[in-house]
Image (cartoon, rainbow, N blue to C red; front, side, top):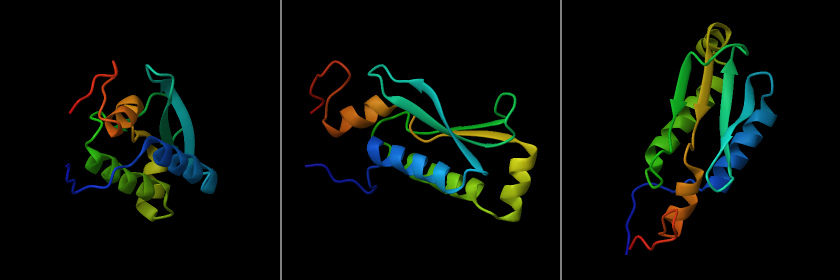
Length: 123
């Protein structure tokens, strides 16, 4: 039995959330596929602010498959940057942000099956 004090944020739910947010506020956020995982899944990022140049601020979470707290914290950052608050507008005018909530989508999916990338049972 496993007891967790955080709610898992499955890859499918996170991907849908990012796509929906980008569609909801297109002038404030851009969805970017920044790469593909070893298993061919999209690694999604949200870009805020300036469109040119490398990101001035890079926020990454989801490196470790079952550490969901960081992914939920990043949702708060994303919601703020996408908001109409004065400080969020100022930051978008002055900087380029790239936020990657799940940099390890394969780990996210495999961990829910208690398997690693080679299929070995982790329990």
